[in-house]
Length: 309
Image 1: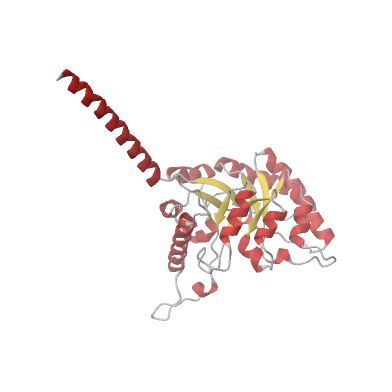
Image 2: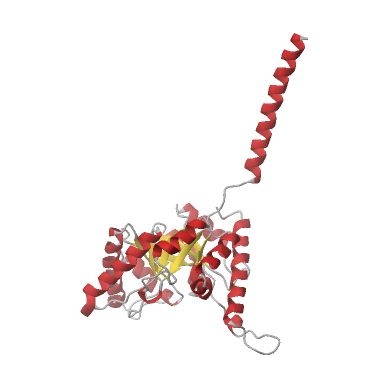
């Protein structure tokens, strides 16, 4: 009887260990590591302005866990809130703030004032916990002298950003891929090659790059260390048009050692013109409802895409 008890004790122990191993393996298999999926809050700007808490909760429920902010005109609040208040909302839903969009045009007659305004914006971004500060658009003469002046200004502002532990970036639209007026150089390429890599990075909007007649993958290969962020964009829902080769873009981006990206969804003209059955125009609330739906479908596409880490 004693011998029989020892035998069953060992067998039971072995069975228990095997069961634990199987359960652990199953748990690992069924709960893969959560992806980081970012979104530019401009995508649902009106909703965030109206109700930051509800909007962040809704986006977090879709799977977005990284945000890029927007502060038009150098706004010193974050969607009407103090930076710490907005960050607390994001923290509540396990989301991090990685970047913001804002811009201040150069004016040599007001340089001291402008640089001080930049410092205020950088203080806000630092309080939010972000690491990038991106200029979404900038007015400049498309000549070598004009873009060189723009590059010098970015270098100067980038040095100030570095004091706050931030890196200044530039976000393109389609127009930057045209040649300069006085040379055969592409404006965007000239800007990349005349800014300091230590202080200035580039957030490549892959949709606008393609619309500008250029291949995002080729630029990722040509400037692997300068493109540190991506705007993942499509005609509307990410991946729905089939026109953008997101798999090739992500593969090259990861090969470059980069990983930070955010979805941006532009409100299409057809949605702004959409009518209700009674002939009335869609309200802004209805438009935002459609934008949230597009955001949810975009997050699902990226979450299910094997090529997105």
